[in-house]
Image 1: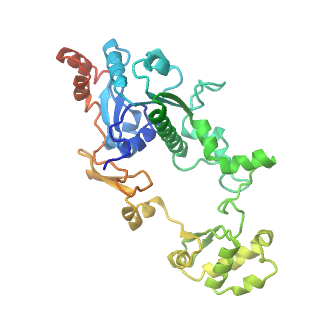
Image 2: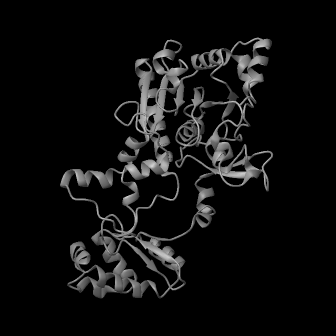
Image 3: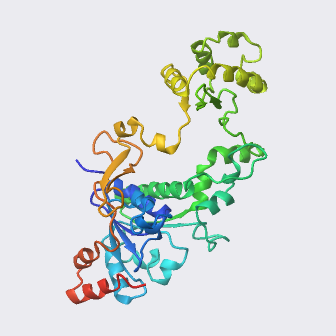
Length: 402
């Protein structure tokens, strides 16, 4: 048995986050991913963060580049361009996330390289797409969070816009790109032809925000900011304080769940209270319903409520920070973490990264090799592409150039 993408080769001309996350997912599914980096410091994500001890192998870089191979190419040099073309001719997929037009300057755009490999799946990732009035505008994660309206959806009315606390746009764009690549590979298998894929961070984010955007498109009503109240607007789908000062998030949105909650916490009187008989009535009397819930949840610790209500089939979870969530035993049971040995790291060389987020019945996604050092596989790959010793030496001489 093998992973589903075993035997496929990916030329990864991407950098930072969205593109590398897309190719990371492909690598977790078994593809060989060859990362093409510029001379000098390579992918800027190698040196991301404030702790200079991790330069070259920053934690953010480790998280999306494990198991890839790295070669260094100065695309301004004719021999390096020839190496890029030879590599592309051996690949099934190419991913790039330069600003529109950059690959064309090097003669590596889809129209130019499809003659090298007609079956190539070529994916371009950019801020606003390869066409349209904003085509050439630069964009990074927080910019797209702003321009899509994402920053205005969290919090409560009157709060200042706030970005999501991790690069959600980069991640969801990478996932969208990987999804599109898999679809194109499936069609290639059926029809034998390649594909050009245009993925925009803005477009992917708007699709991701479907649950907020479509109600507005249908009704013309601006989305409300509901703070920690769930999308349903129910007072029983909100955050409450427990007796130990911790918080729980309750997700009771169906009538049957509300009835189960009332029975479980010994408050059957709610079921006969005219204010709480239906979801609409509970919304109308939200303050009163919340006051009742506050009294109940203030009688026991958060962990008690999480365990007790969840076991009773009532959606409930304790609010944790990332450091708590990352060490939950379920992550190991679900094979959600991958252990890696990364030589040369400060503090510790054995680290963990996050897996793909799903399981197969056999051959679960994963990787068992560390991220590559910059240019680590250059000589190996150049030789495999047919360059002679002199040409390999010339190509390698550009590795540390700026």
